[in-house]
Each structure stands twice: as C-alpha cells, then as structure tokens.
Image (cartoon, rainbow, N blue to C red; front, side):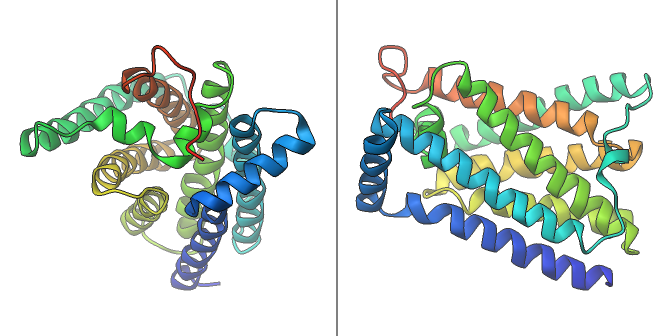
Length: 253
C-alpha cells in the first residue's frame, strides 16, 4: 500500500470509529434510555453505567480501528514499546514543559479575546468528560490514561510510523498524524470554545508527541506525556468547574 492510500484509509477508519462512538452521546433522549437500560441490568447508577458503557465502546471500536490500520502497514507493535535511551528523559521533561506552556498560551489568548469565557466549565460539559466524572475518583485518572494509551498507539505508532514505513517523509507523516488526531478530538465536542481548547491542545500534543516518537522510534516517551496530560487536565477541569467541589461528577442525561 502506498503512503497516500494509507493516509486515506486512516482518515476513513478514524472517522468511522468516532462517528460510531458519538451515536450514544448525540441525542439526550437516547442517552437517557441507554443509561436507564444499562442501570436496570447492572445495578449501577444510570450515569455510572453509561460511563462504563461509553468507555467500553470507545476501546472496543478503537481496537477494531487499530487492527484495521496495523494490518495495512509493515509495522510490528512490540518494538514500539522498547525502552528509550536514558538521554530521552531530558527530552521528555522539556516536552512536558513545552506542551504545558503552549497550552497555557492558547488558553490565555482565548481569555484575552473574551474574558467572560468559562474554559473549565466548557471542558467539564464535554460529554465524554462528563461521563468520566460520573465514575469513582480513581477511575477519573485511569480511564483518560487508557484512552491516551490507545490514541498514542494508533496515531503516533501506527499512523505516524506506518506512514514513514510506507515511504512518507517525516514532516508529512508528523503533520498528517497530528492533524488527524486533533480533528478526531474536535469531532467529539459541541461548542466553539470546546473545539478551540481541545483542537489547540491536541495539535500541540500531537506535534510534540510525534517529534518524540520520530526521534526515538518508540512510543513510551509520547505515551508518558499524553497519559499524564489526559489524567491531569481532565481532573483539573473538573475541579475548577462550578459545583465540582460540592457534588460528584454527573452525566447530563
């Protein structure tokens, strides 16, 4: 398979994965019916049952997408999880600071454009984040980390390195994988503020994680970067949102 054909396949597979994942979230009546049906069969609270269901759907569909793309490349997953050289620890530390600084700058520009915007509240209202906040506190770190692991394997591992293995140049592979990742994150939100914050942060994370992966040939540095950011910012947004300190996270049914 050529690199352009693989890029087209990756776009179609990711679009299908996220479109199917969004189906239970798009319609409030459908969310309510699904949550109540799951609660009746699991004994869990409706919001918790729906959160578990949403996580399972994301991971199952992601596994299918990963398998489909991996089959189209000459890559093997095991070498991607080899340990990086000790010198990459410094690069990872710089990447954490650089990604944090870029995200802070992007949010600061948003506040400068509209000082009244409620960024933590907007992020906490994203349906998949609201779903995570319905889970027990420990799971609010575990679930974002699991999602980040999956996304790194797919976008930085299979898509980025797969394009390179099929003959694409490093810059083209980096830009495509980063833009596809950011577009996928934006596809899961519903307002312009959410799209801006997740779009800019995902693009930054994709570029920095892609540079780490390209430089080392392994996924662990980008995995550590993404998993730490996913857990930290999900919980930080929840803690900063109005009412978050006095009530457990709830799914908007």
